[in-house]
View 1: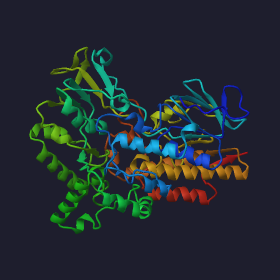
View 2: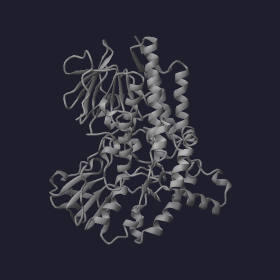
View 3: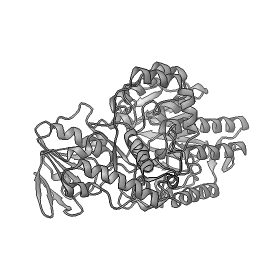
View 4: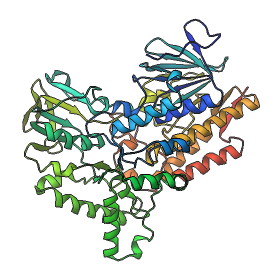
Length: 543
């Protein structure tokens, strides 16, 4: 295991650095790289045995990004852009992991990390103005600045289903798929959950399993990826136009260069409208939610988009009842993240696949032999839990993070996360969250969002040092005002009508608040720069 040595002058058994970065995904690796570049003694801590973050853990069959590969990549180094070749429009997990491993090696980042160690606690010393960070392996690190690149979708949700621990077969989670893989050939497989990981894995599992039973509580909208290899010409064009493409992405609402249809929906006739929907359908995936301006704001536009997708699904699925069961009736399209699939709906035409609608026939218990619903029984060899994450906040609240004036992060966010600009939490000096609640986060290109936030935060650190400030903390009133703004913007959309993980609705007992900032990536960047131009308004600094 690669374990950085103790820093010079550190007490025995304690690592003494300037910056600790938690996480080794896109955000964590970039934070370590930039912090080291700026001369900060830096330690990275990662629970996995290697780099990758989300793309290290999520190895389930069919795992694939729903943002085009050439956009879902680092923008900070033109040389990296030119030397890396993406093979497909939507890269698979192995290819994304290879990319991150390449970046880690290219910038010599592994030597700054302790892998296979999970941060379990962090406590701030108000006198020394330093954090003490502890891992489950016994490492103790002291730092002035704590960067939490812990990921929005990194705290797996294991459902509390009666009898789950009694199941005699294998239980595997899509969020923690075995690194060596798992063979379902000729096995009776049950999948619980039809979010993104379920929708991506179900077609792959169905091809090998003797029988696949899908237990669905909540159907989700999904649009085919229409994935394909990138041609040599497309790859050359991407390299040639990367700068322009990145500029459009940073100036856009979601961190990609894609724009909505150039004419408002009410200015086009029915034929042109259908052509616009068809073109965006063929582009694949989440982009369908942005076909027309205001599609997730104006219910009339949303209904037209929803009707188009429902027509597509009914044309694919042969059994009308199964088609009905696969179509959501509880939220406007796009207000839960539209999934990106490969042959998902076609899979339900297979003879070895069965859909169980848990709203009609809920699970009563899991037994040693399988799943017992109120009306039926299903004998299984394998249970796949595609049950998602304690999103946005779970990775932070599962650590025992204690501020200098008492109270933990879990307590501070018990009624919902309160942040300033999504990067700082009142009561927790010198602690920064990257692509977390209160920022565009999962509603934008996470790679570019991480770059923007890390650079902005390191500028803040440099400002504090230049001015002789040992601490910086979000002002409580500024954080409250920003959080209210996040809520206000969300309430102006249709998103709040969906019981989504954006609102914590998939976790029992979690506060129901809309967590990501939906005002747009470009708008968010402008708000950050406004604070910076005003001497980092919204923060209080101490010496």
